[in-house]
Image 1 (tube, each protein chain N blue to C red):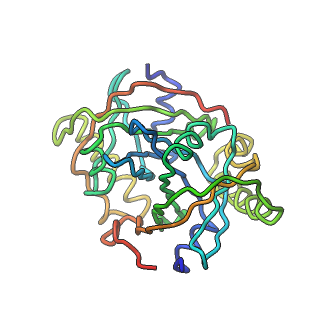
Image 2: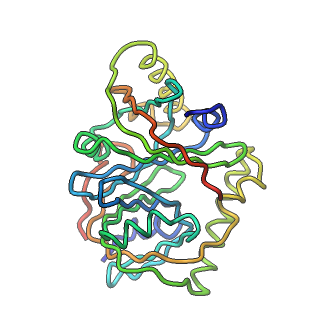
Amino acid sequence: MIQEKHQFAMNGMYPSTFSTCSREGIPNTTVISQVWYVDEEHIALSFQFFSKTRRNISENPLGYLSIINPMTMDMYGLEIEFVRSETEGDLFDDMDMKLQAIASMSGMEDIFELKAADIYKVHHIKDINL
Amino acid sequence: MIPDRVLKVMLNGYGHFGSTSSNLVPAHIDTLGASCNPETDEATFFIRKSLAEKTLINLNDNGMAAVYLGLPSHEAYQIKGQFIGSRNLTAEEFEASSKIRNYFIDMISAMGLPRENIEKLYGVAPDIGLTVKIKNIYIQTPGPEAGTKLEF
């Protein structure tokens, strides 16, 4: 499912966009700094804040993510579903380290803090023809 | 009356227009500029219709809209509202979109990314506007105020 071309769009150089909705169907759209490749069927997103996104995912696990390869500007749309959170382990440590680097580059060291690595199953990926 | 600081980001920043299907599957599309009538709390977001198939189906189904508005400085707001309708853009709106898109092409290419590829994203003009009656606005700038509802 997730191919090499998609992984180039997960390197953190270009922000991704993530949409969720509440159980009443009210949408919420936000920008996230990085998407992590876990395996060919799963990605991880950083859980940093107790946000509307996190509340929505607890009510309705379905989300839509768009990612962009920064060099080609090819865009992909991913239909995803929340599976579980991890608060320790290699993936969590890797995400924490990278997040601190991103925070440092953007002057957000005191704001960004990784609470968990949220794992999502990827159901479908679509090439978006710009 | 929409606060000035939100208007500034709406009219000068980038945006993502979110919607939801009747079976709770979300979707979004990039916006390429916006116009606003602060007196009526209505805003029109410029998009490319060819990329908006799901968004339009969702909006015509339930009308619920959320728009992320952001600046490169990280200042950001979330608008929640009710979709009113879609319409053609005016000459002024095309001009406003062109200004914003050229700004982002220049800014991103200055970071070393290939200009001809950035133009795939920002070089194509929008062709329709999605108008939303704004009901709520939330601060979405990362930090202690994130999630705070703005009164207006």
